[in-house]
Length: 366
Image (spheres, rainbow, N blue to C red):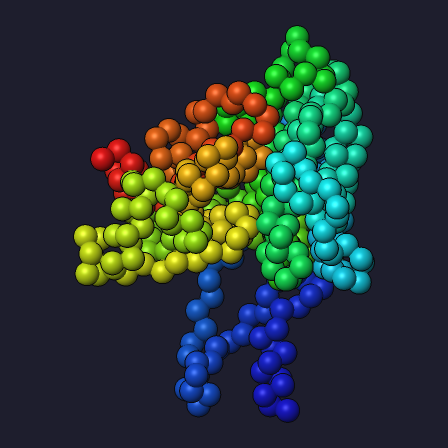
């Protein structure tokens, strides 16, 4: 009974949304309690007041809340898994030539319909749609999104997420004209992702730093759980798909070879590799503890030397990372400086801890 009392004392109070504050915590030796050191806590504020504090326009706040409402529904469907009958693949392919998962289609339709219903969006562009979809011709915003990044992970109950970016609408262009989306990443008004994991988390930036929020299912909203994300500039973790190593360019080959040599190599320290096979999961880890994520150019398929989409993945993730003190590049150019030429354009991606990204770029420039 004494153990149970200690257990429930340590367990968070679900009604308050705050963790319990035990007087001591226990190490591996149950007979040697250590003084409990209270960590600095982030006030668990709701999303809208935080954005208003940053001076974000009310229409933009409403749009972000609508995107998150769709994501909450996606989170519920993901959590239901096979019970909701949404696992498995369809018989169709998207514009990228990838077999669509049932959840891909569901997530895309939810986001598309709810975003266009706001009346403040001129058009949307989705990774799952061949073309852009027009909304209100007088709308002030454009929205791009990857409705379900890492969707191949759904059937194994692993990390997936939704990535989105909001751009200003372009005057003088028709709502159905895809040319209005061809803006560099520096034009983004907001960007973020919702990660569907053990908890549902939001990473969001409106250009004043990156914050993390957690979905509180007791009231159905996102609460601020990390005020200022700061990516460590130095790291010993890297994320890359090693199965493609033989197809990489010489610079990336040499860089990863030196990482693998560890203390015996020119870097003089050991590195660990992590790979989730969902960009949203790998970037989330970098925001939490640093690291470098790479999906470089390769010659595996000469028609597709780059894998990740500029508008749906690279730009919004670069915005989040740069607003957290990190860096993002193709290996030769800052990603957010790229002038898009197509809504489904692909680019190489190297992003994360600034010092490590800079180290990687030196190999590309050698």
